[in-house]
Length: 195
Image (cartoon, rainbow, N blue to C red):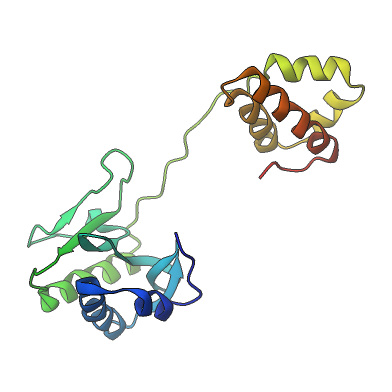
């Protein structure tokens, strides 16, 4: 996905029906006094520093993401959960080629989203709780074979330990696991992250 420095770059490179739709939607968003920026490589609209709406042009439609759309009344039944089971709060309004854009209706959705945000209505992402990190046998052997490695490993954060262990266990082939082990040993010694 291409990175854009500013929203205008995104709009300038959009073509076809998507450009026309994005331009009309953008005009409404800007008139609602939202801050325009780029997030996740696409135009985003914030209020008081909080994500309210995101825009995206796709092959068959233009998406308007309402970050806390679950709280919108949705009288026109325009909103869908595009990632059922993944996103709890986000809802999407898709505009297809040739479809009429009810700008006044869109404005009312945007204003409701701003109002909800100012009232503090939000669903925060739930972090999955994980159990203790399972140290792979290869890494255990490296602790045995390399003096001081285990002590340095213990000084690392829990996140780093998990990263090291998953990096090895996620590999399918034994040769890949060995290559990965060789890569992380100096990182453990320097207490550096893989990524």
